[in-house]
Amino acid sequence: MGQGSDPRGDAPIRFGTSGWRGILGEDFTFPRLRCVLAAVGRWLASQGAPAEVIVAHDTRFLGERMAALAVAVMHAHGQRPVLAQGAVPTPVVARAIRRRHARAGLVFTASHNPPEYHGLKLLDASGGSLGPDQTRRIEALLAAPGADPEPPAPRVRTLDLVPPYLEDLLAVVERGPIARARLRVFYDAMHGAGAPVLTSALERLGARVTLLHGEPDPRFGGAAPDPVPERLRELSRSVRVARGLRLGLATDGDADRFAAVDAAGRVLSETHATALLVDHLARSGRIRRGVALSIATGSLVERVAASFGLAVTRHPIGFRFLSQALTSGAADAAADESGGFALGSFGADKDGILSGCLLAELAATSRLPLRARLAEIERRHGRSHCGRAAQPVRPRALEALARLRAAPPSRVGGSRVREATAADGLHLDFADGFLLLRVSGTEPVLRLHAEARTPQALARRLAAGARLLRA
Image (cartoon, rainbow, N blue to C red; front, top):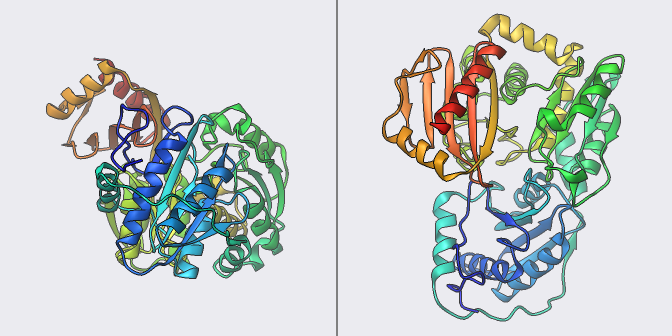
């Protein structure tokens, strides 16, 4: 089959903010996957002598079969594929690329998307997601005519990537405080690939771990493996009724995203969790140069970083832009609006496992609940409340967004718009926060992100954003 042919005969294959994703059996099919893998093989072959390529999958349907096909196609294009043993989190693959000096990584996962989705994440030699220039090159190869070699059935080399990952992780996180504090961690793995890895890491650090939804399930219990508050009610209850120093953690399907729950059972916003991490890591000297943030991350993180003299840069939606800031040396840490956090000394891509361990270290070191530590930060730097919402993509809403980008409003919900930017959806800046309206790069929804000074003002701002899209 030539590279330019599309087995569905309709929509072209496009890479979003985190690889290629689609509904299994409709958009994401094996004929289309073969085309994508062949284009990836061509792209890798154009980079020079054969090199190692790590192939992996998480707990979704048919992941093992897809990974086997990828190994065969990479071998046919002259690469040296290595297959990860079992279902593994994406951060484990990202770390292995760095450790083994591999050229790339292919991970079959749809991350936080609903169970009917599947996807392919592509990681470059830094362990970070491919940037726009690289994905456009692969898309161009998809459209180019030509025959590709028929994949053979090569002898597959398999590696257990988890032990080296844990070894490196435990060298980054302080063990002593967690064991001495008798910290109890409730961890909701959401039936994803993070269950055995984060559990093992926390236990080896001395925490007492209670695991929820740890059994692999390609249906993820019947809902999206996305650690948002409505999916974490059981975790919140478990933390709230327990005693002693404790916190709750959750990771998404491939464990690159995380969420944190305080002792009262409240799910922290991504901005609050990131502010805690930046404050803790700057105090301990592990962030020195700067912090890279997405445009939808709240200003509290920026104020915390500035108090330590750290430079802050803002980047478009998509962690691949933050990965570039880490690999260039412009920042030591990076965070986005959806629970992604990376420490540059450990990896260039978001890592929910590392983030969870660092939050455990923070709680144990301070001997305070997360909410109490956050209250201290807010007393010094002011309050910030961030949230997000989503609605299905409909023609009327898309038309409204296009009109808003062409002619942004001067006021929203009674607040004056100080600046409007249309580079990534529509970003409206106010004196007390922002509102961002954009089309998702991973599924057919419109996303709304907002910041305000109080929870009530945040709810009003998100509601105002929804009204704008209905106009």
